[in-house]
Length: 145
Image 1 (cartoon, helix red, strand yellow):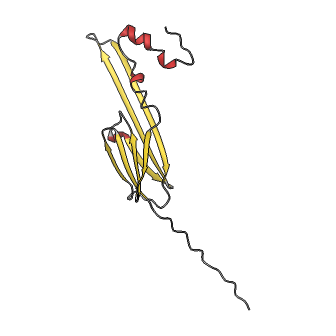
Image 2 (image 1 turned 90 degrees about the vertical axis):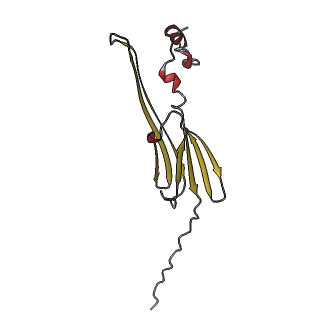
Image 3 (image 1 turned 90 degrees about the horizontal axis):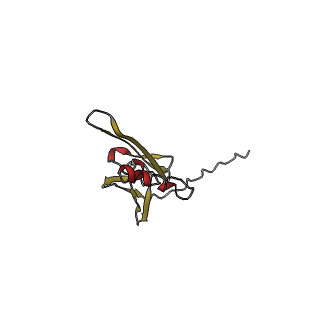
């Protein structure tokens, strides 16, 4: 049935796909369009963060450290063109996905401190614990005459 309901929008194209024998491209990449799943583990000397980024290549992923926030973003563009023998389009699809996640790691952590590795769709980060030293307040005296 092609009638959408507010509770079943994800099933809107099910019958369409059965008739034309393909799954819409956006349905295959639906998990990428959600938030980035992350696991954060506390270690003695820092934090280990594992982020799932299925469908993204290493070149699609960016890590930025700004004002104490570690921001991971991933952006992916894909085009799928298929033509028949006469050059008429049978199907033409485009996909664009972008996701982003931020963690506060502290203002004392630098880019050199953070270690990152991307393998098999998993981004692994290590952020060391840095002790924040309270600034010593300088005492100012008033001269007495």
